[in-house]
Amino acid sequence: MMLSFKRQQGLSIVELMVAMTLGLILTAGLAQIFVSNSKSFTVTEASMRLQETARMTTEFLNRSVRNADYWGCIPRDNVANKLDENHPAYQASEALFSYSEGFMAYQSDGTALGLSGTDALFLRGVGGAGGIEITEEMPNSSANLKVNTVNGLEESDILLISDCIAGDIFQVTGLQSGANPGINHNTGGSVVPGNGKPREGVDVVVDNNCPGGAVNCLSKQYDSAAQIFTPYFYQFYLAADASGRRALFRKDGSDAAQEIMDGVWDLQIRVGIDSGLSNGKVTQWTNIDGLNALTSSAAEDVVAVEMSLLARSPENNIVDEPMELCYPSWADCSAGPNYDVETKVGADSRHLYRVYTTTATIRNRILRVEQQ
Image (tube, rainbow, N blue to C red; front, top):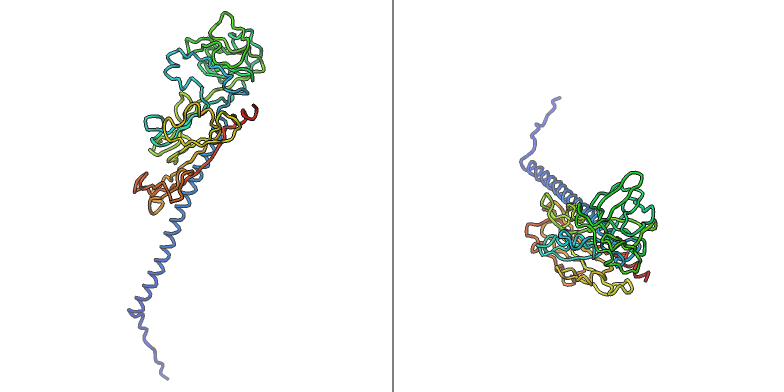
């Protein structure tokens, strides 16, 4: 019996073209899924980076604002600044040595500290001095301060001593170590600006037992009830970092500025004012929109600070086109976004931007109102 075999002829050109078309469609679909997932991952990563930037920045600023204008257990009016205001060093850097305003803010025009159009925040107050304690009462108000230790202190440091009755800001002119540690507060010579003004600036009546009217007398004879603090002068502002990116910086007195957080493109501030610090409640909001938007007298009545932060991703080409936002957060955007990145920054800026807002109270002023 003969068997017949049919010859294998393979695929026709039509079948091959159909198979290739199906393969191309499948490959295109897989590529599209990959591109979409990659884009989604990039946006998610940038968004998480911005959230972390905003969280750390707002937390840092909030803590600093809450602690501002703290001078121990007394108001600033009861603190005398004993630094020598007639010394050329004082006059050349009055903002550094005056320790007058616990709070101030302005919008930079490019000539002042900070990038043009961004807001800067200035805070003053005192912090701990490393556990330094007074060990015995002063025999007179020009005598050196007997303390438990001078570790961590240096000649020329500026300190605050207060005891809930009076307080004095003075400069350390000498230190005694060993078994009987002490702190000198003479007129100076080896340090600048040195000390002066034996009674000026204290809103209390105390017999300070100042022998011969010495110019280095403190406001009273302090004893172990007094505490010693370290005054600070923090300046928060935006500047370009070493990589050319905008970042938030903090400068403490004459020390070199420190970068706090990169990725901060803009900072806008408005302040809540309680006129005369009458009840601790905001009666007026003032936008910081210029160098002199906030007067010194109004700054003394600020009880709340609202900060709107514009964070920007470090990578470009995250979004398909420049974003439009409502910034700062208190702006009236009922008619649509008011911040056009293409206009404000540039048409090629396809970074991811996010707006974050936080409000902090100056709690030492609120407590002062409650104690009145």
